[in-house]
Length: 149
Image 1 (cartoon, rainbow, N blue to C red):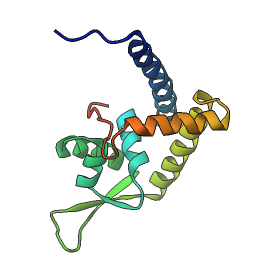
Image 2 (tube, rainbow, N blue to C red):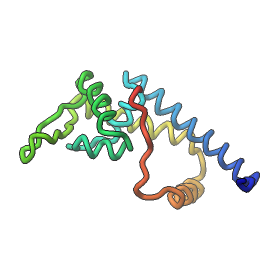
Image 3 (spheres, helix red, strand yellow):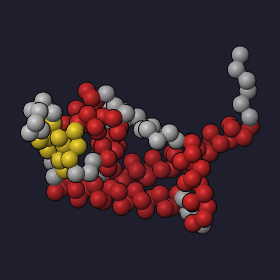
């Protein structure tokens, strides 16, 4: 049998889910305004400069086959192109198009504004919260993605 969790842990769990829900709601709303499914928006936000498909899969914690579908959607929207690696033609690099750069910038700016609303706290409290959260998240952990989005 498992030991019962403390009331504080249960309350923290509920509060973290509520905050995450508010952040996800803002991100999803912004993605919809930019005509992007949430997972494609997450991938777009993760791209900067040129990235290998494998690297994007790692950042999104997705199988490479899932990333292919996500990138297909971004490519259909004219937001990325796939460029062959000069040293290894099997490797594809993702490069944002001009429109991809524009939508990425809009996505990041609006997401930051939305986060400002969620974290409407004095700066010292925001910094303390950031430091506490950083202490709970391993440096190599990435959020998972759902290829159906």
